[in-house]
Length: 70
Image (cartoon, rainbow, N blue to C red):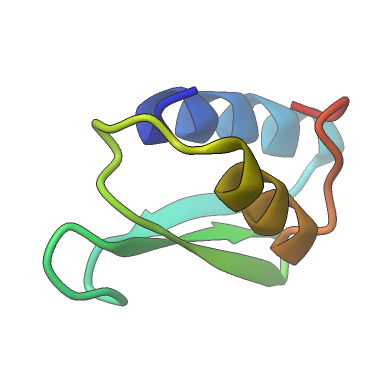
């Protein structure tokens, strides 16, 4: 899954749950940025590139989600 695909899925999930989702490119350096999901957040690297399984698990854990949620 790419960062852009994850962003699209998180936006849809936030809408269904009545939460705010946003991407903040200023909270990051270079190609990094921050996904805000409700009151939780995680750092995402280049949104165009593939996210590895381990990193994806960590990001979802930061957001309080499971792989089944997305």
